[in-house]
Length: 283
Ligand code: ATR
Image (cartoon, rainbow, N blue to C red; front, side, top):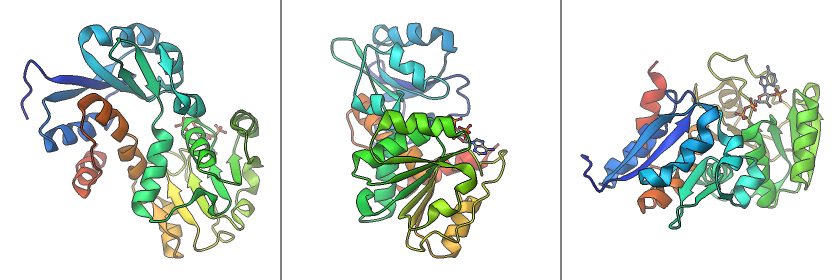
């Protein structure tokens, strides 16, 4: 769709930003809903983040997404942030309020839960122990979302144990740090397994994990989406575990921002998945 002089504006702020799939994702929705709007990539050097964000209201932007490496610094670059950003330890969505103030939130936890619920009816975080591999930004948002949804036990497995214990301390609740060497046994009796590390991603080392101790009805979710079918998901699927791929979280985390900027509640459809997948297979 062609834009007019009245087009609503939003974008994604990253450094670099060329890898971001968000322009394709939001561009697909703008087209699908016939909205007079544009969503553009904004390459902003970290030293300029605050200044760049503060000019958004002047430029008429409705808001933006923040991606690597800006999420954490985003907490300091906005005027205010909500409980989701505080819990996740970062901002991925910025909305310009009517008074011109920048409000930050994190929709990563929302995206994680929505992706699970979209692919599996009846997901309940309180169903049993969850094992989360990783203690970076993504893991933090996921663990926080699980705790907020009533998870009674989260086993947090990370290569660097200090990072896991720091996260456990900050989030409170029933989070237990587990050594990376003990990851196979940690799967015993689990209802959910999430890989929130970069292992298994194209160009990264493989995730070495034996699923032997994992109950076959446990849900397995990999946040890695390149490749879409990771070795973890393939192994889990082969033994009958219900699986959720990493594309779901990427697509669902985009929904609240789009609605706030463009005024339409967007849907995650097969068409959208295909459009974004098409960009993942290209170099
Ligand atoms: P993000 O913010 O996207 O989650 P990150 O903060 O770089 O990214 O976190 C990456 C996660 O993958 C971390 O949990 C990291 O473990 P460390 O905390 O020990 O660094 C994990 N990871 C990356 N490479 C790994 C490897 N070779 N073996 C085990 N874990 C690894």
